[in-house]
Image (tube, rainbow, N blue to C red; front, side):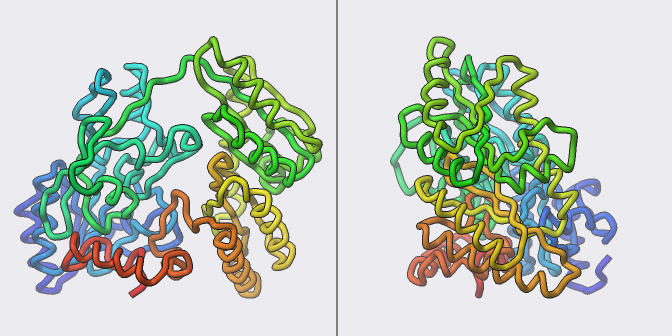
Length: 463
């Protein structure tokens, strides 16, 4: 426990807001809240575990009074350090605010607290024949609050959009300690500024979300899953452009390059085609009456001279087998290269061939193994630089390579992050993408919401 008068006062005042089981002050108890899925770690002064908006508001007002930084946290699955706390601050963990408050299938909405998991939302919506569009790989564990803080998406975003397009309204506590309500419960609404979309993706730096009204979508009654294998990466990249240039939109279009395929091959007992240069995982959904024709259109668009084979899954078991390849990739990477640099860049779909070609060239130029996979349907590619942190020369080459990766992405009219956010990892690069006047406006917005800069300070912006 920290013994300074300031922290003793903080603990005493927090005990007036939270019951004992909801306040952690011992360093050992706080340790699990000191890191996220990045390599950064800082132990906070305390961890608060509120259960309602009123407690969150009281904590924020107290921290304003005492000038204590607050880092809001879901389940810590983020990769950019945005959930890593300040050494002189507290963590406000929303994991116990995990209730589904309302489900209204007739209005196609659900109201939830931020600590509920993505999977719990999907299960509750599924009971009524609906789903929420965001489906990150970590859906079984990640929280809706975290999904909103990062504007997380996943494979379905290619057809159904991200959290921004699928959230109707929010209740949140600003950095000034005010409880605000944004958005509507209807499919239309243009009264006032769109603060809902502003807060989504703000990484907990403007306000702490305490409730969210989610837009639900009806589940498709039929699906078709295909796996297309190509002789080289360029052929697969050109197929992505062709698929997205015709009217039938797949509900998932995932890409894996040769390095990713080889990694899975060496990690498990997966059946993989020999000498595959790239694989596309494609899923089409709709009604039983249209699914076969839609799948045929997608299959035709996927064909080009570099195609080696297309496998169509006809049973549930075959679908699971095809998707098991893609799902195995992240665990394999974590085991083989736990210190990798993992970026999630995005370019317009038409520029995917140039992006993939450029990444291959950078890999050869800097002698760095790069594994590429991701949500090709919306141009969101996860670029993984496999590095040995004990080799200073390789690390130096890796960071030079990363610098040029970002230059390549921006030349192709892309963005440096599609769903992982900025946090601490990318803040040094943000001025490359966003010009000075625009950054100035963003900082003014931050000041309006959080005048004393207590919400996740030191993140996103440099200076």
